[in-house]
Image (cartoon, rainbow, N blue to C red):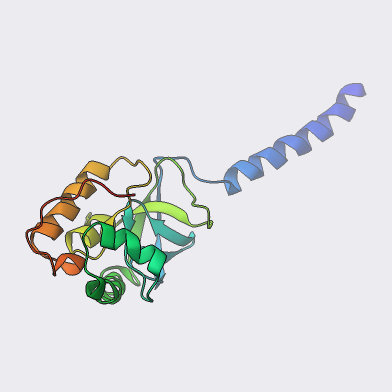
Length: 182
């Protein structure tokens, strides 16, 4: 009889923990698929059924002037007049490339940022990474504050855009690679 009295509470506890595991964050290195239903800006999208997604390793200019946010881009050598244009271009690029499309989200390390957005590399149906494409087009810079597995590759993509005068780098063609920052 004593075993039966323990069995039910243990079963309930076990079920509660299994539900938490299912509803919790996916493990690092996992891949999730979904459909892009909204593009907020150059580095944030909405992917159903996962919600808001922040692209790992990239930072695109804001559509509205933000002295604090702009400072980072200016320190890296971007021109002020190029920032708003690049913000609009990044938004349009993302809408054209991914809105309404089925994509794969690749997670690594920390899976959610301080705003509750899922952090991911976004893989297009053809296998290219949206994160890297934004850098190659000069529509974003590498987010240097945190480490991530593709950082060196992303820095090379940013340097390519800078040297070829793409996007935010159009005012400083051929300026060389960027390795410092925040």
